[in-house]
Length: 618
Image 1: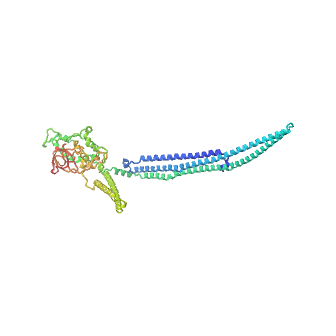
Image 2 (image 1 turned 30 degrees about the vertical axis):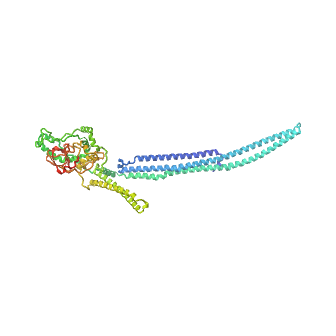
Image 3 (image 1 turned 180 degrees about the horizontal axis):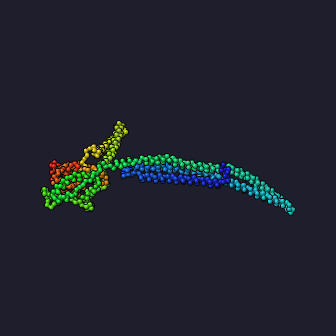
């Protein structure tokens, strides 16, 4: 069925219908455009969401990414990023394959429709013109016929009237003949116009209009088919990304299946294992010795024996417990008051016995609030302990970390340095080959142009190797391949070693405090503690044990209850590792494991002559 034969008289309706068809196509284009915008906005939001929860570099989250659950979550974020990319592909394909194509097609349809309807209107206007000519010819023929009929009637009346002259009758007869001739001419003209009109009308309704309407029908059918093809393309665009989206979802499922609780638990152990042994039992400390000494002189001898037994356990127990009292020790370190050592006890056998003197070298600890107030109002102390601020720089040898974590960090650093060395070596080899080529073919380049760079690379390699040796030495020490250094002196002088690196010793000499909690801990304290980077041990560096500069003999027993001090028994012989600096305290060592401060007035010092000019460690 054809529009030209069936709808020959529906020109206006066809014009409206074809316009509606183009509007439908434009509506579909608008729909696809909005869908593409939704897809691109959705993809953008997905990417932003994925980026928002991605692991930040050089942050705590980067450390957390070693757990399988966190890895799975990161994989999910990456897959969602790829998922968003597929939505971007959908948007791009819809824009290029549907919107752009249909927009051009609509423009072509509009142009074709305009041309066809312009031709149809032109044909209609021609038919209207022919019809007007026919009507005009018809009216003229009708008028001439009426005029001829009236002229004939007038002639007949004049011819029947006996009173009319012959000349008037002849004139009327001639006038009637003229009118009849005009009527005959109008008739022939009308007949000719009518035949022409009929021919034009036949051509119009059976040739021109069917042809135009057929073009419009073809155009409309092409529009409909094109819309159907676009709908198929719309579905195909979505269908093309379904396999990739399925792979993204499969990746998320696979990452979820890879989560291993046991492995994460083991990772927690590897991350936080310090290598220290758990603390032992807390030993009983007898504080009734001072009461016994006030009762009788013989109690002093008994207390000496008690002091010896206490001496054997107190240092060890404090060492095992010190990880749990570290914050209190820091407060003691920062707030210890400027106090002189206790005077020697009154005794009949002592050459410096003082009547009514103090009965015990023990000192009462001040309340914590008083010590805090003293710390807050003592400005010079802040200068001396400026390196103990929280969040300070991590030591180069990672000495602030527990042994196991320190070993991992050192091993990681050694691996990084070895990679850097290998890169420099590869670059050096490449430049060496280039230099050889230049030497063989001077026209390709100057060999001297790469000589300076080779020297720089060689220097860099030497520096990196020195760094590797340094870190390997620390690593070997941690792993026990080298003799371990005495941890005692490491912690005793680490604070001052850090300060001496930037300021003279005299800067802090005026703030030197009593040894209780300020300078020393026994060996077990170093090996059984887990130190975090935010605590005051960040700036502590290891150093060699202090050399022995003499010996001393205890004149009186000293309990050493305060942190940093050491208990001694009367008559005990010990090693001196640091002289009295004017504050009334001398630093001694019992063995390689125990050292601390005792009042200078409690001991008799015998310095070695060959150590007179030895360097003083503070």
